[in-house]
Length: 251
Image (cartoon, rainbow, N blue to C red; front, side, top):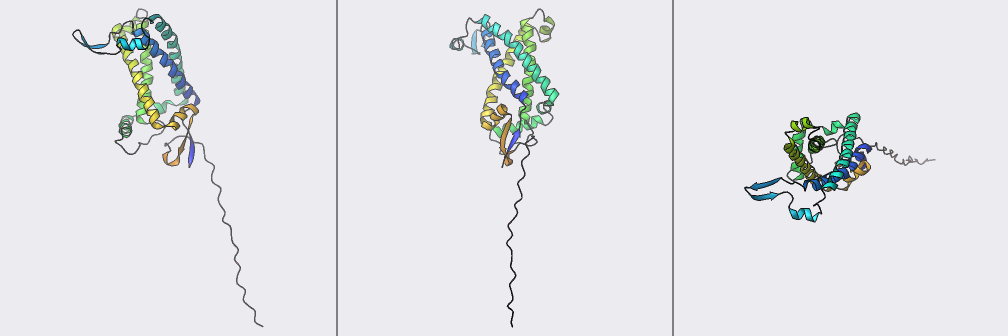
């Protein structure tokens, strides 16, 4: 028997889908800015072992000489990123959704079990309420990373006006490196997240679009609010009348 399981409120879905293109533009425009000065490489003496973005990568994406354009897009979408983030965090606290996002003492153990299951080293999927331990850690970390990106962004955007913040983060160079590392973290999260969505199947993706998921009873997540099913009508068996045998009357 299939049931309709309600998973994601409308507000959560809006914040999710708005944040996706906003964050994409932020990363893309950040790359246009980074091209002007890309110091992060692994070198030995004068020999470069690893360069994050070689010249061929920049030319293939038409990145060079677009610094002003990148800065313009970055500053505009920065405010959309902050606004969407503030509304999301505020909603989770007001609605109580934060209870599903904040990791607890069992989340790290559950995350290991989920990882083993995803790698095929565990046969049964660990039980969960709305998000498993790995998802809680990942989603909560993304929220903290968003705060870190805003703080480090302001520290390198206005290092004089926000000198106290820049100094708190270790100085301009340290804040810029921290901002870069957080951006790399977003990219890694994106690929892992998309891979997990593909592995989970269409119904999981549908739940982030429509808000509900159709599941079978034997695969139903534990603890989710579901639409009550209409009870089956009792079947009344047909009664076949029995006729008592008639004894012959002897005259």
